Length: 231
Image (cartoon, rainbow, N blue to C red; front, side):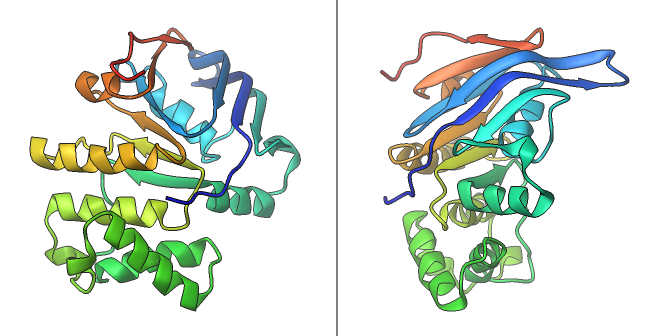
């Protein structure tokens, strides 16, 4: 699987607070994300896992510290440049597939490519390629509203990887799935991690242990979660 190479995502002394500084889910956090490989983020509800993921993916800004993507200091960029950076370097998979039920699987994937600024002809080719990789080619022309929950999540994965981002960010991507579909989606993410960086926020400790490394978000910082089953 070909993925465009990019320098690591780096967080340097990143702090994020809420409620006027009373709640500090992240405090002086340092983190480097490089690919290929998988990273699990675990922790109690409200520990800051999703906050951290959102800062990495440029969906949120820290109150202090520095975020670099591809060597660029994000705080020095204007909004348009940040949007381009996010679209080019990241793919996102959420707990809810967030697919449009009125569009086909193929149209949902192609729409994501349009947001990434990819031309119409290439969008079709890349959408078909991504659906093939997620074993959804046979459902390409099916409206998303007629797909099962597992199928919709595989379309969401296809949409996230179609532009071959060097960093794939996943927030509880299997949280709504049964065991069989959990295994299927995790296998897709693991395959993508052979060529890119995949970061997974999860409450599933079994899945976390199968990632190349796992960090626990706790007390505003990060610490190794446990010895990974993967070396």
